[in-house]
Amino acid sequence: MWRHRLCLLFAAGAVAACAPEVVRIPVAAPAQAGTRQHADAIVLTREAAVVVGTGYDRTLAAGSRWRFVGVIAEGAVYKAAQGVLTLEGANIHEAYLVIRDDALVGFYLPVERAFSPLKSVVPLSVSDN
Image 1 (cartoon, rainbow, N blue to C red):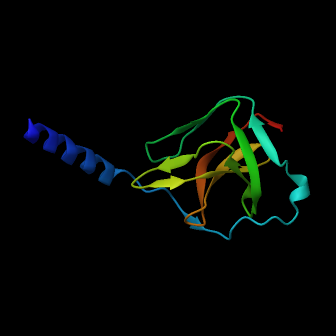
Image 2 (cartoon, helix red, strand yellow):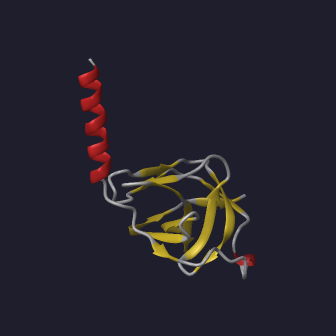
Image 3 (spheres, rainbow, N blue to C red):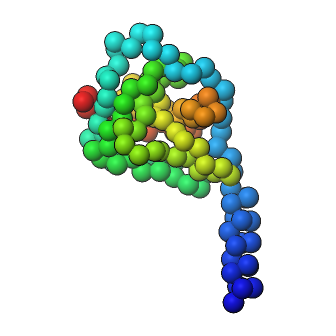
């Protein structure tokens, strides 16, 4: 029995070690300058499927609330109002949405102070809250 558990543990570790890393591009922390053009909070009015590219895709739930944090060059940054959004690859990263022109263009990783771009932008249906 213990050999079976040891094999399962080893296999799980080997799979995790093979997962691609989340792409990270260093950026400055989100700035509050010029924030009048962004809503203080938004609500997703429709579910959005996001292909991250690491094999661990995400679904952003309809009705989820996001709080404005600031702006980076890539777009407006929104943090989950409840809970924590994570991106997974070889490691797990806390992530905020980066939105430009009502589309998700990538994620801001606050711990790493980095931007993780999406290969394909995801149109979002949002309302101001």
